[in-house]
Length: 483
Image 1 (cartoon, rainbow, N blue to C red):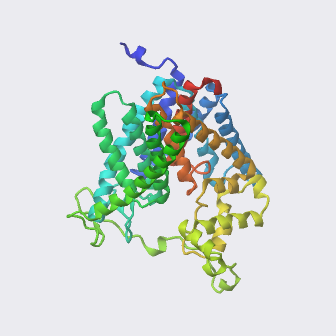
Image 2 (image 1 turned 180 degrees about the vertical axis):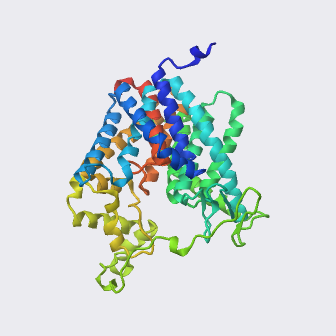
């Protein structure tokens, strides 16, 4: 077989796949050498992104509803920046420019055929799984030994947060760290069922276990909930495919299996952390140490003045608005829910106050730099609150009701078709193809507690749109009438 015969027939789709794969690696490896990343971002990135986006819009005129909704949202996002006294689109650090990558990442799964998607996922899984397997080994060893490693290039941390028991990688916070390892774990779940050579399942299982354990030691509830629900769905699928009972009994059985498996998965995170902290050679009770290996530099403590504080002028405390975070100003029920949500409820409350102060936000949204100004003025916290910890609220504040409605329609479509693909009785559907639905659903569940989709661009956003497009492309293979 010649090389020419082995290349995809649709060379435009192949070129898009190469560009998307390269851009994903570019973001994934950004913190390894942030200086190189920043240099490339200020040069070649500014040329490559318009070419890829323009090529996607010209060559792949998607007629699918999901693609049109996403395109409509991006256009509205650009218009909303202009309506907020930013006609030159120079504010928000050119966020509209970065968000344009949603389109090629999502379109890729729609333009590749089934074999192209499988090959792309093989390469993506190898890159993401291998990279996070190495990071996971460092993270787990750092957790067991109660230390952190230092990136010799950027002096970024990989390991324990000083004064905490949570793992981070390369200066990302624990929540983002957990999401990174969740992406690798979900790709390993797909590969376990999709790989054609059973011998490959052993390294796949090992990689999945390392990534799952690393998620556990980040102590991140949002990712734990996302993985709990998706793995409970997988257990329910296994029962549905093998149970031979009537419909009513099957529904009851599926509910029981879902609840039982969800409880077991969530408890397994605690079991992993307990086991790792009680190993004979674990240093969990010792003080934080810094690796002194030849390839690792000594870490520099983060100075207290580096932590961003709310700016309050002397003598202005009396003029500050009342702190709605004060438990004495709310009912016991409110305070209990606020505590269970790790103080997120009071942030959601501030979103309502933000809209009350400027009702025009419902029509045109606001700029990113203004989104949290009311919240940070009301909540008297020592650190600056960066976002609303919910992607729907964040979308509403930044783009108004038009943007929120487009995002809701897109997410409902993705989740609805993902569930149909996952639980479909069609015998042609393999388990590997079904598991593609788990990734976008897990990302949406995670984003209910974080603001990483549609209003920001990093590896979490790119993973969601990439896997959402690949899932939807597979869906259209088996349900072409909905294309």
